Length: 434
Image (tube, rainbow, N blue to C red; front, side, top):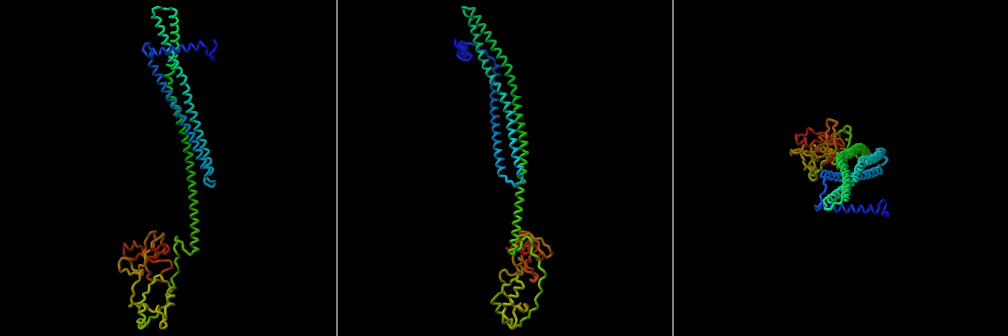
């Protein structure tokens, strides 16, 4: 007969079909309870363990490959991030060369980590699972041979129980039974030896896989920690460089501002005005007016109350003297003021107080607030701290007042002691009127 295919003849094909029909018939009889079935509880437990082991191994293999894929994704993301930083990092920034070297080392570390977990974890797991398909096929063959053995055993028993015994058929059935039993027992014995060993071997495989993975992770994170620390150090020094440049720029602006202020005739608040030399000499004594002159000019002062200016200097006095109308050849401001004491005038607003109310010291003019610290350099100077409120007082002798300096005392001292013994002079441009 012609061949039906490569290595398959019509007779062999018919034999295989016959075996399948016989096995199907035997299984039907076993399910119907008309034929007994060979059962091996211990072997069935081995097969259950094998199926569980194969399922767990396949899941572990799948998860390991997913982990490797994630590592590759992280590597790509890390490389893109390093490339972005390298592009933005300007050449004059601190550590430009170190930053480029750091990016290369980071990329190499990711490559080594990816390759190591692939070779030592994923590959070993793949090799472990390669043996499962062959064992699974042999278990299936063992089940088929067991059905063949049961079928041959039942056929031989039915021939022996028949009324008409055909010795030739009985002998042939016995021979087939022996051959089926031998094939089945050989497969059964092999699998009973291999399956328990394979089941116990899973522990070692898991240990090696995860020990290798943990070792590679520990090495990777240790080296990555060093690189991350180096990156942090570079960023810290870059920030210090930026802050230093910022301070230098601020200092330059301060110097330029000081020069601009000096050009605009404004003094810098960071330094007090220089104390001038000794005050000018007092003017000569002025003549006293006669009583008739006083009575004639008293009405002028009753209609017009002059506003005293405590800060008026000698130049202002001279200007006033020039504006006075001469009377009997003399200016009123040249008279002795003691003669005019009986004439009183209402005190205008912001005038000097005499402290009669008990709430403010005698000679109080107004309040100022310190906007800069000032350390006293002389015994008659007042110490200032930012935020201090100072009561400005009139000088006992206006001629003692120097340009740019005021007399006063701390408001807190006055509220506590109610005495003006702690007064002193201070630079006016260190304060602001409130």
